[in-house]
Length: 329
Image: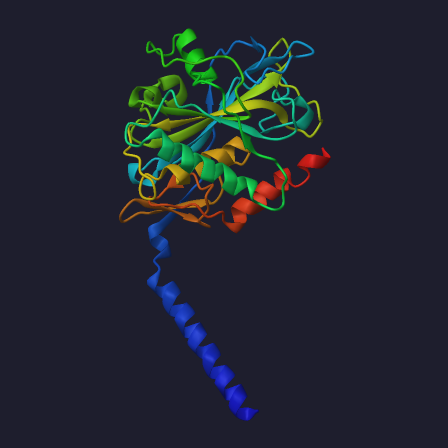
């Protein structure tokens, strides 16, 4: 017994020594924490009366939608960090948004998604990017704490989506017509790859633009009343989401399994599509100006490169806290 106690004491001393050495080697004075504040943009987004959606569901009453927010991820190599943008925060001041089962435009409590192949990546075949996006959606669907019934809407022919692209063109924020439609095509719409010009539109990405930093962005379109006031029919304290649109920046060189990995970015953006926010503390090393996150997670606001397609505990916790009771709502 005495020998065992001596061995245990010796082992503890080794662990303490290693821990002390590790902390000594880590220069905390060379680190600073960043907490980006949300951005606010004053887009005079008109309230749209939603047409009969592509799913064919007939609406029983008039339905109105408007642009609510955007969330984007950046390459940490750019020195810029992902953030959240709120548009026209009217009326009830609610800054959280979530789906409502009985309000879905596809007529089911399941989560639908659509992949728009009319805006393909310049680097990869659509079959490769579609497979990567499908894997990302399946990863979220396979989490056992929720039963979302995620399924893909596949129309008979390719249709061009894009509430956001059409809105920005119609309002004169861009002179380039990127196509688009005000119709609904799914709860989470992967609206394809757009050129650098889109990611430099000042009203969205500021005067410095985001063509060299923003890899992907997810926009939330929410339900409103006819006056543009967000609605909350299930009284959960969150404005009700109509659908979300995801756009990928074609200014980056996209890959399948390496930097910039489609599945990794699609997994992050689909997290936003499923109502998850950014997560993790952000630090910058002063000596080399490199960013890193703690803890490391899919929903970190920055992408550090490579393939990162495993849901972490913090990602799962965020997902489960939001979706575990979905079927009971």
